[in-house]
Image: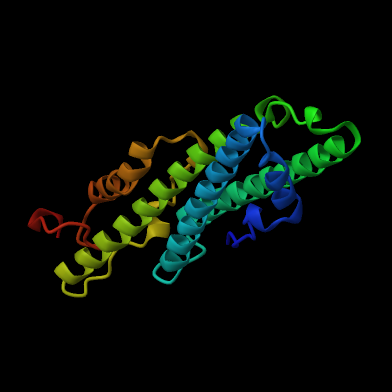
Length: 209
C-alpha cells in the first residue's frame, strides 16, 4: 500500500536560504515565482496525504487483495514517487542557485521557471491525484452500496468485489474521473444481468430472486 512521505519543502535548509536570498530588492519577481511553485507543490502534497487517508480507511472495509484496491494503491504509490522526485528537483535547484549566487552574485539567479523545469511534472501529478480521488470515491460508494444490499437482502450473501472484477481490467491512468465514479454501477449492472436462484442477489427486484 502507498505510504506517507516527508514532503514539506520549506523545512529544507537550502529552500530557506534561497527564500532569504530572493527576499532582496530587485528580485521580487523571482521570489514570487519560486514561492508560487512551493505553494503549488505543498497543495499537491496535501491532496496526496488526503488520498492516503482515504485509502487507509477503505482498507479497513475492503479486502486489501481485491483487484480494484490493489490497482488504485499502485497508482497512488506511483504518484508518491513522482512527488518525491519533484521535491528532490526543487531542492537541487535551490542548492545550485545558491552556489551560483555565491560564485557569480545575485545576477546568476535569473527567472526561476526557465531553470526549474517541473511545470509538466506538477500538472501530471495534479491530474493523477484527481483520478486517484475519484477511484477512492468509487470504492467508498461501492462499499456503501454493498452494505445496503446486504441489509436489504436480509443477510443473503452479497457478491464480493473480487467476483465482480473477475473478468474486469481497470487502467486508472486511462480512465476519466466520470468513468471511475461510474465503474461500480457498470459492474453491478453486469452482474445483476446474470441473477438466478443460485447466485447472491444484487438488487431488490423479485424477478432476480
